Length: 190
Image (cartoon, rainbow, N blue to C red; front, top):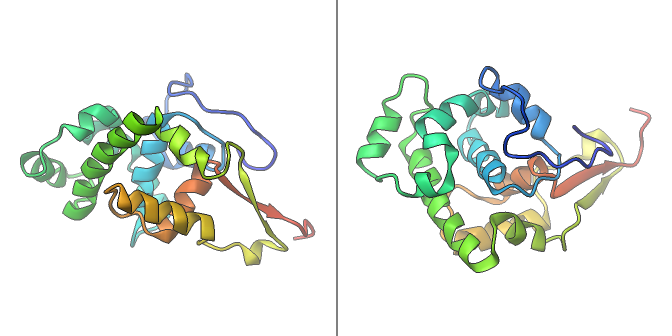
């Protein structure tokens, strides 16, 4: 769903994605979304991607949904940082990194605070680009970067709001996944 396609994905788009998180993530990537649930899922893939490939993290979307109670922000925020983390880390299909599991729970809690302040996580994120995807011009695909000034600014603010595992690279890629940042390739001869 790259390029000029500007559709917004609904929380339930009628497709059964339970079998392939990679296909789902790939389909979402770059599509402007304003759905807090999907944004939380995309952020979580970014958190778990640290040190792994995006495919390894994205393939776990169905597992994330199962172990993180449907990825429902209020339910994830209520998980216990000890007992639930141990249970989740012990799941045979889960990426068992305890710090990333705790970060996901903490991020849900921080997102609830952001929602209380801004009305939605989406409103907060999109405010950084005034509601319109920000185009990042590059001449060729080889010049595409994994960090940006806007990504770094959002990362700093997310950290200030107590989000975890949201450094400049993770946040930049999360914003690209959410369609908030978009690469504009100027030389289409590649």
